[in-house]
Length: 256
Length: 256
Image (cartoon, chains in turn brown, green):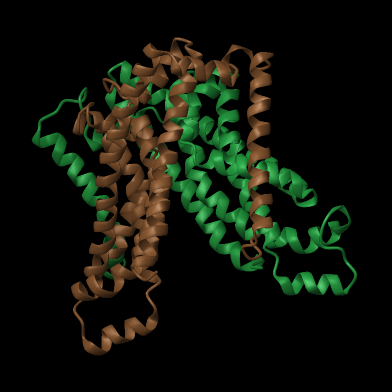
């Protein structure tokens, strides 16, 4: 509920966040110190101090950079593919229905079920990239399609009266109209990409946060497990933040 | 008549036929044996030969996934009701819900497994945990999005529209207007709940389709592993179709 942009409202909103998160952290610290949930929930402070130790810090950063590059490449590939599929349906309408069904179907396949297939087809090394791409492509596809549907009907009429070719209509009318929606999709895709990359690394990838998470789980290295999971979260948060910034700065310049 | 329906099927499902065709081509051109990549027939045959086994495991996975979804929905709904009567609760919970939404949940499955132990109950906890926050957010925003006209109407009849005294307003106006939101939440969550249940089974390794996938792979029974993956995908598509149908059918009955 945003009633105008008066500062009092903003401050109370921020206060709620601070109180909410503060309570969560305090509860956590206490639960960890008293070990309410056993050894698996360590206090927040011990996780942080563990992650700051030089040896574990280096390990975490090395794994995180591998996962980040997997997620980034997957994100790029996935968004380009999602965008291309949506556009090709627009250029050649007879294909549209089949492409919709195919995309929905591929999206509905649980990523974990695709693991065995991807190891054989693209290899263990590139499986994380492929799963990240698969996780991203559908959100982008749906976002772009949604954007196409939001083209004002006046524009549609103009296109039809002047007999504009589909290709040009796509370039000059439909795609610019779909841009805000595309960026929305990319924003959602950022966290899916990290998720996909971590999941893909469970299928025998040599290194990365996913590998770290599974091995830490099996070897009961609780601090390592939590730090790795937090790093993954931070990564998807950063991706989301960067794209949100882009949305705020870039879109007004393009007239949105 | 027949030709018409055939061409309709073709225009809708050509992508899927293409996918199966490519799979068959990939297997026969590279002359792969079953241990590397089974052909479509081999997978279907293995599915049919072990029909009882697969049906039991699929049923188990479906039950845990939908049980978790139902529990999460119930919990989210009840807490959203409480938040509606006591807004300070929503102030504390909403930031938490938004934060958790941006977490790559799969990265946290190993942690939940570590905390809750290895077993089917953990799969249930994981799916409940996953579905709780989105259900909470969607239900609460549904309660709050009551049309102003209705609020004004109730006010003019002397019916309180907030707090404990407004329970009749809540029961007859706010709750029904949240139904479309809840349906949307379910549609979005259903395939994810299945994915997370599979991931949890994959990691815990006691039973369910996720476990069959990894077990058969380590036994070099690739046809079985792929059959489980195919079955999981089919289930996920089914979940998606059912909840989309419910959403489409009942959305208009309850439109606020």
